[in-house]
Image (cartoon, rainbow, N blue to C red):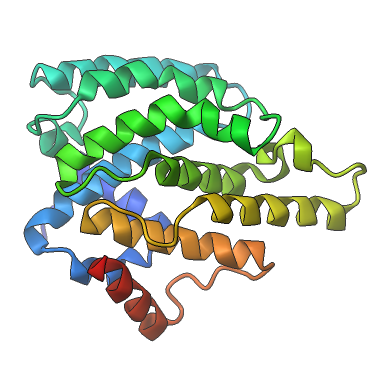
Length: 240
């Protein structure tokens, strides 16, 4: 058996958070799967930096490291294992590097939904352009990418991710849970059910959106527990 590599560890970390992908990826050509996983794993690294708990300084330092790394990718040099699959792609890596500081600012609680999306606008547009180069196909909607980042933040940070406009008046648990579900519903309204972009993006977006739908409804996530429904949902997303 081949020993796992550093690259495998990053790809496996993403798979562990998205077990649904084991079903959905059958609709992605096998030759494209590793590169799509590498891109999604990179985006997950940025999600982790955004949603850091506790002292943000180590995460901010890591963000600065990533900015340098992405600029090196533009010159076809890489140090990170994900670069093995992503660095050879001619993509606007420097623009994405320049947009990374927005993630630090986006940790602050936004005033409302408009402010939440505005805080991620530059990052989402840069990521969308890079993704089109990495995965091919149309440039995905930046608003959909931002909505998915905000949904992940809600899942990770809970009430701290909810805008001021939806914060509950007191500390009653039921009111706090309702505020989070209301914010999830607002994100769904801004997130098209059909997301443009390459097939891997459409699939991941469908999986993430379904998680948010269940959260907004107050249901526990049924992660990969209903494979036939998951297969049907993935097939619809793959069709475009």
